[in-house]
Length: 285
Image (cartoon, rainbow, N blue to C red; front, side, top):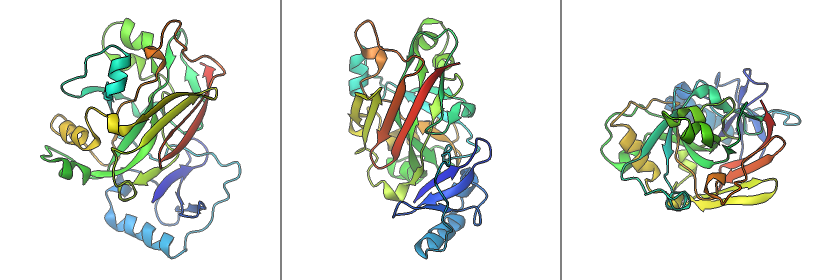
């Protein structure tokens, strides 16, 4: 299933994109798309049954904003330097264990919302990523099979980063990752049953129409299952938590000088195979 949330920011309603590409209203069945729903197999079964029976009302998509596909996100755990080609382009040694940092849930915006270049920024960068959404509480998982059984679905994430704040200002990476609007998510959450192999997904990103990133999750140093298993030994993962799993080569940071960092008016488009496409205009904060 492709689950999404539509409407004005803060007042989104749950919806489903059916196999024919028609937008369907879920608000008569469930209050929202969130961790509580993803953990409720009975509720998900009712959605599937209603969709299969053609019982869901059609929503008029004209002019309708697509919001983040997940409400009330608990935490966003991010994996840094998780692609072999990205490590090479930045001159970094591939890590022996996953590199972790966090993004606050309030960085999340819709897939077509405006992204703000922070005040004083000179190094705002792009990063297309596969987002993993947790569907069952995970603690101390032992196998990759067990880890995948705790995944509710997948989505496109844009891990926007300010490299000067992240790398040159001391401390942790977090201050270069948590600026307002720095995590567009969506357009929809694709349930795990429709993604048979999360290590076989293409990732692409364009800036002003020029292809900048063209990679595959096959290049991940730590695959989705290993990331979920690993994280469960350091923190409890709850339904509705999100994991951004890293970006392939092609970011501005890895380019020769002068590096083409994002500026006011730039347009970024990105996609993950089978998970949809985003488009954002960048504006000065």
